[in-house]
Amino acid sequence: MRILALETSTGSGSLALLEPGRVVLSHQLTPGQRTAQTFAPALDAALRQADWEPRSVALVAVTHGPGSFTGLRIGVTAARFFAYAAGAELLAVNTLDVIVAQLPQHIDAAWAIMDAQRGQWFAACYRRLPDGTWQVVAPCQVWSSAALAQRLSPDIVLTGPGLARAHDPFVPGEQRADPTCWNPRAETLGHLARLAYDAGQRGDLWRVEPQYYRPSYAEEKRGS
Image 1 (cartoon, rainbow, N blue to C red):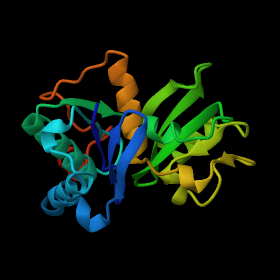
Image 2: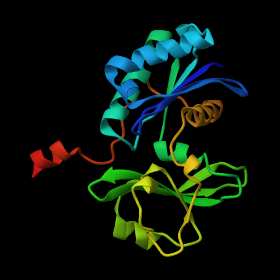
Image 3: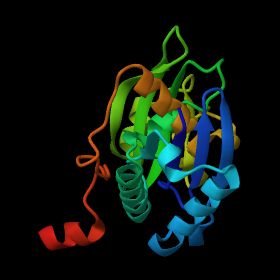
Image 4: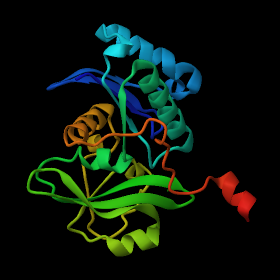
């Protein structure tokens, strides 16, 4: 099965092409490639480099949130369009699930954190199951720093790109994963989507939408 994975939830993003047992290509997008005008050429170049025909892709994977409003909208729109044009299946994966899946095997409990702006955080808590996969303990929601600190303990590991902005620790003695684990990667997304697909999960092309977890600032202003 050939998989196209699109990860655009963060400031830059990445795309990856995967086949069973290997990553064929992984490409880090620059911020300029994450616009609607330049994302398609980057994707086309990746397919050409791998010598893949678009219709040879059987599964498209995309992160659908939390993350950047613009990035999620671009990624989900591109994934839906490509899947429709190629006749491929489409699966959406939570961005925090991707982040926590990148932790080393010796870590068995973690919080994944992303910046939600305005001094708030997208965060979810996970624990590792005996088979090595992760189970959500506290699902993603928007937290203030104070509320999040009340849920943390020094023995649980923190990971995610939000830590790059959280210069001060949330709690004394907190543990942070290595920064190389923090940003979601398209190859990890593709791997998780393949596991979900093999387990029988299927997506609805017409119902996959970005999961923002909060209204935009403009929407909040209109409602005030």
